[in-house]
Image: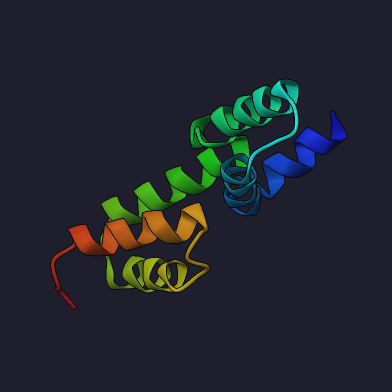
Length: 100
């Protein structure tokens, strides 16, 4: 169980690595099944409490739509490309019209 908790905490790094592993091929059917099972759980951000909190925070910032909220979202959007927070922040920026 601790390994799964570690994967959950590092989901944005683990997901691409697991996809690459599946593309390269795995040695057993059991390995493939376990990787696919983990991917299904990790790719649903609502299933991971920390991801859900981050998504909700970004949603709140989007609704606030103030100059300060925009600065925070812009800083989040400048993060690691594969991070869910970065992708969500970029989507918010794309939805906002230039205002400030």
